[in-house]
Length: 190
Image (cartoon, rainbow, N blue to C red; front, side):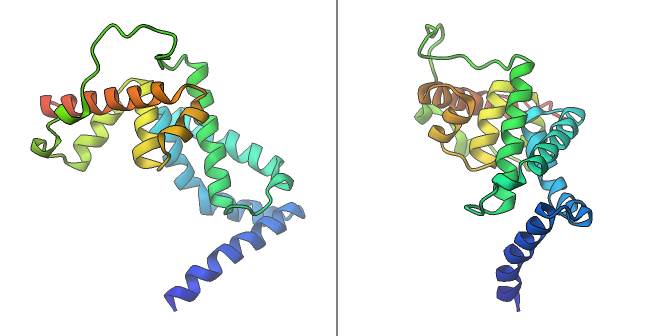
């Protein structure tokens, strides 16, 4: 029974998309209800502000619904919508002057931490502490860390999304991870 539900879910979502393409308002509402929470959470992890995440969510749905004809079922509707949400979230941060330092054009003033020197095994991480610490990260660090750890993008994909070099993404990720570990070690996140 579970396997049948897993197989029929994408088909039902595709039928909803088709109904939306035909202008069925009820289907628009149904798709919004199915995806809004997950897409809001994706945006919130990137923009780190609930009001901004709500704005991004609305903009993403408006764009998605306006360009439904371009959806070609090469991926699931959810994956297609998630990409829109992520791009909207990043563009929102860009408007707010997200701090990503391009390593190719900027001399590195501080020595980068070596990944092997991180003492991650000794750090006991709790989910709430991590969430609080991630929210405390600068926009650039938080964005790269979120896209890599929570959204599952690799460094090359993140570089393409952010329009920066692979080296910049790798450096931002290493710095974000080190800063996150330091924040957690310092405690006082309550």
